[in-house]
Length: 110
Image (cartoon, rainbow, N blue to C red; front, side, top):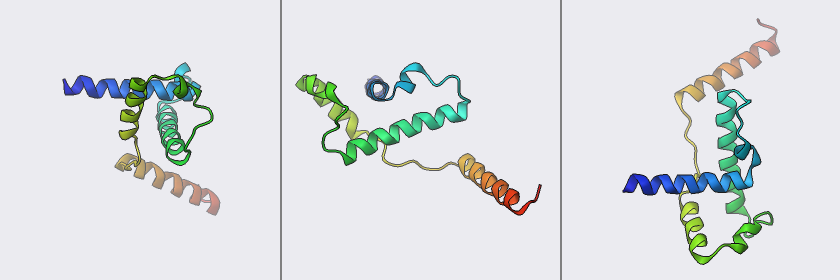
């Protein structure tokens, strides 16, 4: 039962993200997998940033039309908002390789 509840929260979260960010609704399938991951992560982070920093979101007209029960669901989703991202070894390595490549290009080393 707990798994189904978590799945429902995740599906509602993606529903909210798709409402806000059309690229998620249409699907970023023309981009490489790495770029698709970055697009999704950026949309999540921007959504959470907007929610945290703006008392009223001017683009969020749909909230005014929601019933109390739907607003409770949205509040529950916001409790599960992503507020940190931990780097993985893979991302650290990718960043190091990029920095080294940029440094070598700057120094003229092939």
